[in-house]
Image 1 (cartoon, rainbow, N blue to C red):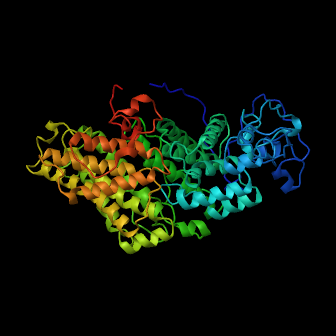
Image 2: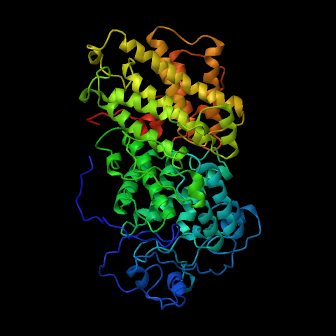
Image 3: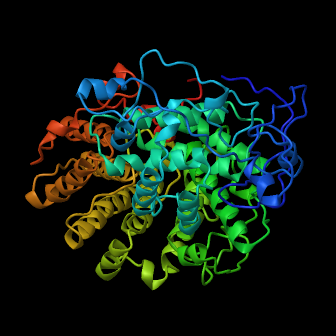
Length: 599
């Protein structure tokens, strides 16, 4: 157990952000005994815009510190070297000899290194927008890849593949693109966008993170975050959230799980849990960040009070607006979200708001199924179990027509790159019913003890098991419907393999409990289609092999034979050699692990 160390933590953020991308609501830096920073001739961007004398050195201008603005500096061009880099010499290619990286390595997104590199002198320092008190205020050589063309390619990939899925929709596309063109985007944020989207541009099926260069970027971002706790902003939080998503996509579950707690602390430190902001667009940006933190925390918390750092009860915000309103800065106002009394409102009933809503229902469901002995029994009137079923029914009944699961809507969402997020809503709805009903399933980690059902109505347990089977089948039917409508559909959300895994596990366990097996071709067809969909994800998400490996173990142990080539299901190990055994990979994913009090 890690002991809790009490300390002094900031609680109040700045009330005005000059820019969503470049100037966050930062805490005032602690006024310790650091030496005065050396001034440089050009001055910072903020002081030049205000036409005042700059009051400090790179990243730590006294004027910016007093006004609680992020201090930005121009990147200083570094001179060329006299020798070629190692990569160009090996390839026998012409090298531009630029520092810190040559143009060829920058274009090919490979690590550029020089032999016997002379340490950067005072005239060669590349300043970042961070405080000089941070050990990483002078970036390492790989910072040079941030050319405008590279950033723009990755930004396009981000808004095509990442933004529409899960809760990554907190950056406004117009501002990000403008920031990339005029150079005002924070370098670390640009790097985070490139980090999370690189796998979609140059897929590398053998590397969990999408390549060595991407792993280097994520390491730099992680180190910068961990060395910059003294000051943080909404931009810092956005970077942390992108890192969480990237680590989860890459199978780095432990770090991702810990980073969620950091994101929660930053969000509460910036007071994002309540409405604030100088404009509606800024307030909506802050709302989306806060709900993204809640989404990840409710998933990572796994229904256990000791893991929850962002409880729903502490958030007093409306649900996010529709993407159209957010992208075009069209104001729409609604009441703060209350799970027990929520009624959808026009302009605030899109994919993101529905996802946050259903995840809030999930938080209560998982809390109940992880602690069934501390609540009323499911069949008792007024139980949390019955309330959860009613909440799911209300969520589905109030879906607007454009979010209903129809072939027309599937085609419509595919043309807007929103198909993955749209389908995820309906998969979560089916999965949460499985989470509830499999309490009655035998021999699962989530099963209640047999004595739990001593007072249950005669058919309650049998009916619950059958309903779990029905909703597990529904997951396969939803994916089959999508595949029939869009044969080329490949999910870009790493939760999809988990939905497939849970669907297979629940169906196999139910058939085992009633003494039946899957024997017909029709019975195995949907399984094979789901396996094919997961296998198609491997090109972009190599760690999808790990889930495929676990699913293979389910069918192998149950004796079910599928017409499916399992050659691609050998796992990529990111957590040690012990993960090569069936049934051990998912145990490393904290939200999926059954909690053992003494472990």
